[in-house]
Image 1 (cartoon, rainbow, N blue to C red):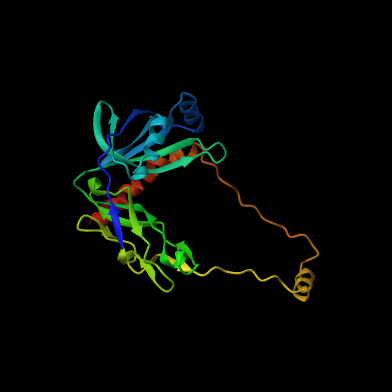
Image 2: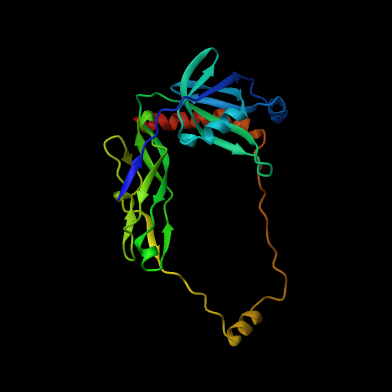
Length: 249
């Protein structure tokens, strides 16, 4: 009912330059120079603050395999395999602000989220007039870095009312291990909901229930990624490294 689509290895490259960890003004200077702050960790090594070219990062994030792309990271004259594990955008202009990079061992399995792409027209839509609803858009898998698929194609042509496509229906073969609950719904066909106009009596009752005093809406402080993130990045990387070691044990 569904087929997995695997990507061919892509030749990607990201060059990183060491930088001194600093305050928000230091991070702004990095951005003014055309680079963005980043941190590299993993593979049993200490976290290293670096700066990278945001154009190279965007190219990787917008590639077919997206943030699951394994690429060559050049740092201090050495190359290692790495992937992007976290990234932050400026909320208004959408510019990249900061990324976290993780060194990857190609012989050690990873846990990643892979997008699910629905393929075909469901019979319940074509013949029964229903609506196809995709409940789950990503599935967590465990596999070797070289076996990470860019996405999983799920054929929904046989879906009708009362029939559900679940995680257990997605094929994974021997290379992929699904970690998401196998009973979780991926997609199903639902009926079209008709909106019923309220009666005059109901409309009057609803209007009478509206409070006369204005409602006070409390707005929480929205934290925009600032330079504090760069200062906390090494600490976050160390926590991630400790969690990774616990999972291996």
